[in-house]
Length: 117
Length: 113
Image (cartoon, rainbow over all chains, first blue to last red; front, side):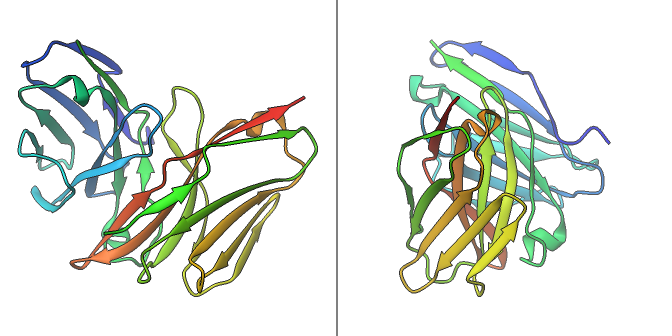
């Protein structure tokens, strides 16, 4: 089991550009959550996907959008990049049991480091 | 909304005990978590406690929960240099029927040999 994988590892973009980050969940998991971790901060919840739909959303603007595919993998898209979007973007996978609060664990990927110049 | 606060930095000598503290505001928390993040890595779940428990022990780790004061602590016994990392406290609740996790800002633990 490869666990949660994310690509790319690092990415450098300029202001105004668009970026797509990718995540493959752990085998057996159907839910993907995305978090933004700015330098020196804790992860901030962006949104959660399962059954190919956005189910929950944190306090992020519409420039942040996502998608989930039938194989449960997910993409995070950010449009019109700002300098403040520079961060580590973490993907976490979990199961229906986690969503319902029955199980406690979501598994995190290693993250994608996005730098906006 | 939910808020989780932690002290930013803790320095201990190898072999001593470390205690990392956290406060949270959500009175309807389901679980409370401690995660570890090493440089350049993602988050690793260390331990968790149900919101209706007071204490949980797992090898060198002891979690204490004071639900009245909304205070959570993580004690690491016999701290080793490999314990140097950033430790995140997090709480979860069922928001709209789905578990939502809120993280603190993290405590950087430095272990001095």
